[in-house]
Image (cartoon, rainbow, N blue to C red; front, side, top):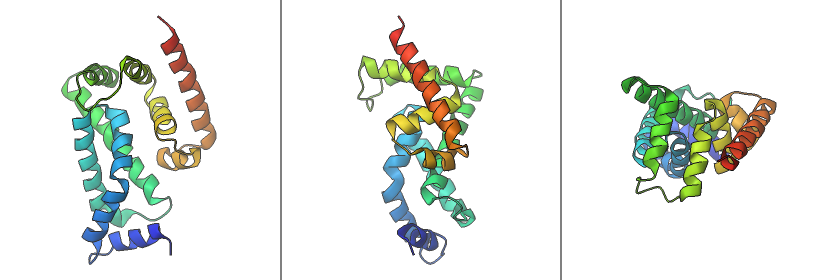
Length: 180
C-alpha cells in the first residue's frame, strides 16, 4: 500500500481521521497556500481560502474515491475555493472578477508579506490580464512547476489543451512585459 493510499485510508477512518488530517495539513499546507496565493494574491485572503479549503477537504474526504491522486483532488478544491472567493468579492463589490484581481495586485505593493519588486508587480499585472484558465495554467506551471499530467487531473483538461494554454499565456505575458 502506498503512503498516499494509507493516508487516505486513515483519513476515511473515524478512529484515525483527526490525526491523519494533521499529517495531511503538514504535508500539503505550503503547496496549497501558494496555489491559492497565486490566484487571490493577498496573504490574508490566501490564509482564509486555505482554511476554507482544509475544512472542505475534512468534510468531504469520505467522497474521495482515488480516481486521481489525493494531491490533485485537494488542488482542485483549493483552486475552486480561490475562484469562488474572487467571484464572491466581485459580487460583493458589484464589479467584475478582473477588476477584483486588479485591485488585489494594486494592494500587493503595500502587502507586508509580498517580497517582490517592481518587476514582480509587473509580472503579476501581466498574469492578471490573462483569461482565468490561462492564469491558472501559467501559475501552476511557472510558479509551482507542476507536470502537465498533474495539471490535467486538477483542471480536468487534456494535457494538449494545457500546453497550448501555457504557450499562449507565456506569449501574452511576454508581449505585456515588453510593451511600454
